[in-house]
Amino acid sequence: MKTIFFFACLIYSLTTFTQTLPEQKQEPIIAQGIIIGADTFAYFSLPWLIVEQQMPFATKRKYEQWTRLKHNVKKVYPYAIMAAARLKEYERELKSIPEEDMRKKYMAAAEKQLQKEFGEELKNLSVNQGKILIKLIDRETGNTSYDLVKQLRGSFSAFMWQSLARLFGSNLKSEYDPNGDDRLIELAIKQIEAGVF
Image (cartoon, rainbow, N blue to C red; front, side, top):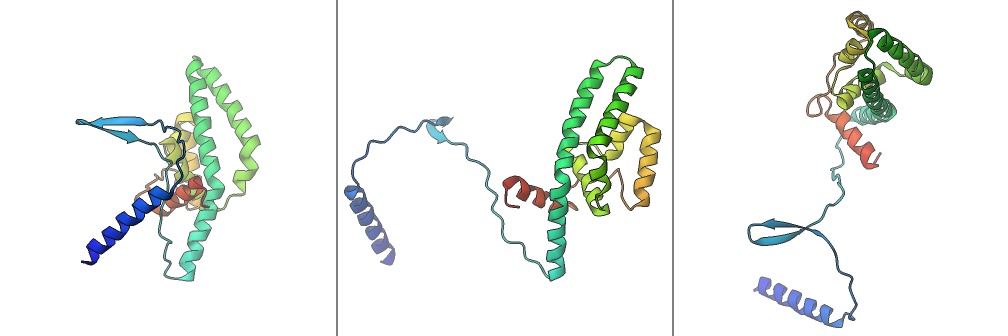
């Protein structure tokens, strides 16, 4: 009985509301359509919206770790994006250089340029920021840092840099796992990209 009364009130309010609205000339809405079977449906592309529940933290320390992780990701994420863009640029240039000597000269000049541009900034990264950067480079390029050094500088250089990284508790062969160990890093990136953080 209550359900019938509710629907009756709803219908009455809708008819009353629509009758009291002044007539307005409406512009037509142009939309794409999708045909499914014999029916045609309007199709609208909407921007992505991330809806997340506030993360519960068991302790104040866990909250501080999350805050520190977000800060570190926000600091190194631009470097990972730049690394991916530069890598594509270098690969494109290297394909157009046929001689090995010229390729080595090109890479040496590129390395000097990178050292000049980012050397001081990257030296000031903390160990944790460096570990995150290694993972984000894998995320953005699809190759581990070890593989990139091996491709661009050779096996011996890759071995030397890997040895140095291991001394500081890092691993250039670290792979990015957004659904496993790196779930919180991925969440921080999504928040950065959405403009939430």
